[in-house]
Image (tube, rainbow, N blue to C red; front, side):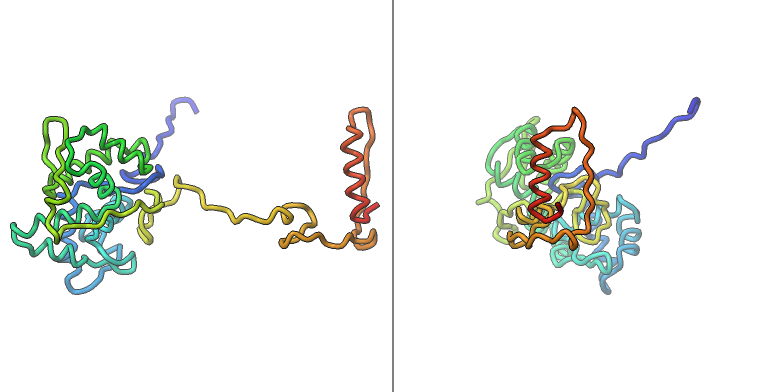
Length: 269
């Protein structure tokens, strides 16, 4: 249409590309939301529509992404029917400055993606490019690798797990982590960012397709049975089929012969 322009809706930050999930907001901001969630859920779990507005200030996709980040950092329990701040979130909110670092490290390493990146390079000085390699190795979407690395760096520094060395990041060794903050390295679940957590409401529009059930080979053949056996050939009367062939110069005689043999086998002709 002349003079008109179709505007494409930009998808909200954090969704619909596929790939391994990671928290989409920095740890410092996650903790702010977490402290608010502790206050809002002090008397009991709150439904999603209440929590998203009261804690995250957004009841739409942005609120869902923020809730997912808290869940990945083990700071939020429950689902859309009732969310409640976790025990770790309560510990962080009430901790003294001396205690807080250990709790922050535990929250940061509760993210399976960030845990993997940290354990890959713990004790090393690494460039953002190498951090990106670790993210790509666990199938973070290529378009999201830089964002993942940036949020990882910010969170690692906030949690006292790393210091900046120019453009590089110096990660402390696992032996330097307090026992209360230690988190066992976890394997990355086969979960995409399009379906981050049950009940978050993020549409599944770009993740891996569901696996289709495999049928036995015999069942893929017309007339086959799931156990692989062949049914008895029907009689012409049972079949109730009328077959007509149009013969011309383009007809493949070999294919015609095979069709006729198949029809004879099942008693159609």
